[in-house]
Length: 279
Image 1: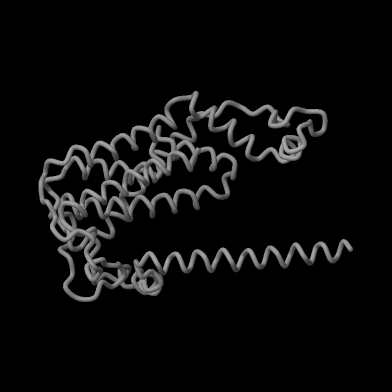
Image 2: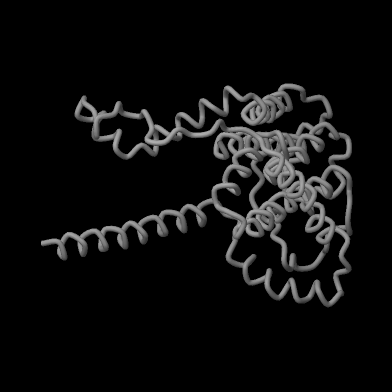
């Protein structure tokens, strides 16, 4: 459920970034500070995408988050709320800077605790700078609508839930491969009768709380005095983390592949050890 809703929202955000790239030749939030005021529709869709990723009801990402919170228990609720607030807050901060010119003007010195994309090779040489671009906005709007339908249409939720049940049906896999049944039951029939998937009052309330919390980190990043003590303490933590993020896709792919290979090696070693102990 979450993957379906999250994928629609993130794809819409990528499309909206494409609008900025097409119009201005950049997607750097400091370099575009207040420059996209003429594209308020794009800005509203971008802000909606940020709130969607934070868990805003009744979008599909919010329903998936609510189901995850319910399954994980109360102990992990702070983790869900914190990660949602930070994720949505970063996107909402960028939207406020780019489309409304909110916050302090961009710094001329080092970026400090925030990354910048101004030094990268531009992907668009001749931006169009036109406020009329309906085709490029329709696609992100449709994607956000699809994400809304995932969480708002009960039939879609039930269909995704049934697919998830089939995907996690361990006994059904060998039965399907062998063309028979496993343990006297039909493959994919499910060992336990599951409750209908849908919104609950608690899930909707937590989703609204997560969507509201995004305003705190976004507002702090935009208007917190740069010389204040909490700001200095936050920078001491954030700057080393930011230095690990170059913003180059190749670096991230290298880290991702390296991490995958490392964990695959660990898993293979554990499997071989288990086989050796059994022998």
